Length: 130
Image (cartoon, rainbow, N blue to C red; front, side, top):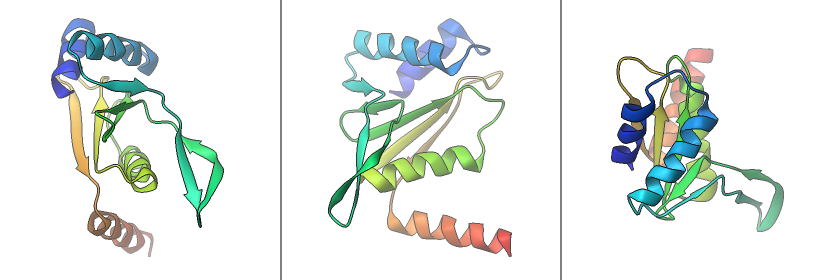
């Protein structure tokens, strides 16, 4: 997956909208035989009942890894929180956050979801707010 992201960045560089990178990655994943589904609506539940709200990550790869792509000047905690929420809500264990707008190189972060990570980020957030 990361290799496909590097290939797209090598070919297109930075400066395009996120949708361009999304489409390029769909092609690159197909060419490199990475099993992926783009923009798959993921169902959410509350007390055993399905919610009408859905999370729609950019890609779900290998049915386990959520890939969220960005085309922004820099990655911020809001972007990380979005990916962590996708992981938390869906129970997927691993996420990849990739920023194609960074220069001079691709910016990416791997996030493994555990309840310990979520709680540490939550308490860090509370400490900053107080």
